[in-house]
Length: 371
Image 1: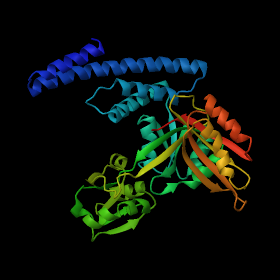
Image 2: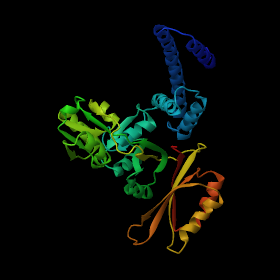
Image 3: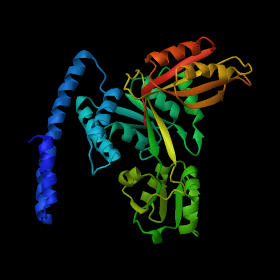
Image 4: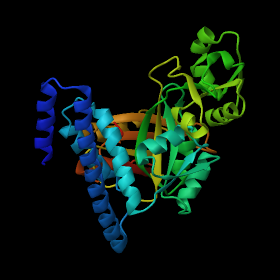
């Protein structure tokens, strides 16, 4: 049955009064069709993977994934929301891609940290995850070819930019190939899931600070302790029934914990931006962002003049950040994020105009926009 006819049939059925059992039987029938369609899709993905291996093509193609997500979003007529549809298809894409070739992704931190969550958000749960002890180690894993991609934090809406990541991007030949925006939700976890069992609460200092108000209202007499990471806190709670850990939703799954309370952060707009780095440029996707860094001579009004090429080409700048140049007091590099791909004519023209007046310019990557 064609998809459109199947949906029309379902709507017609829902318009009549039917018993719960009858509706459940219809769900079972639809589920059977979905499983069949998923395996049909997976079979095609396997054939694509075979052809890619013969022609030495990349397994992960960011612009193709973006194209699919845009298309299914346009096809969506509800009642499922667009973010839900995109989330479901992101996992479908990842599962099918894993049949083409297993994808290894390095990330900063331990399992169940927010960077791990960001890696799964972007590449799906089917990846082989490679935790690392430092951001520089993520770069090294990708550079040495031991993983396909790395995921690192770049900025937080409340804490600001991760300067160390910026510095590594300047010194590395790796490219930004994707970005992930993750809303940070903190959860209080424990072995039993009962608040009355908790004698101490542990977490990373940042997480504790972001939940201070909630903790003061709900656990005013319980001591708190800072530990190395939210994942380490979850591991401690898994080993000690008297501990509560503030950690991610993924930590519940990884460390077999129960939720005492969810979304306990004091501010609901706490968002961290992560970058996926690789050794290849991403092709244009029609909704791209370009990141670059440049330095100039210290002259009055120089930054205004450097930004004029973008204004003339009507290119939107979404971010500008300055960083001091090492061993050169009072001299700065400027990091820019702009709307568009470096291969677009107007972007290419603006970058050429900019470069004429730069001491140094480097394109860090053009990649599908995460928003």
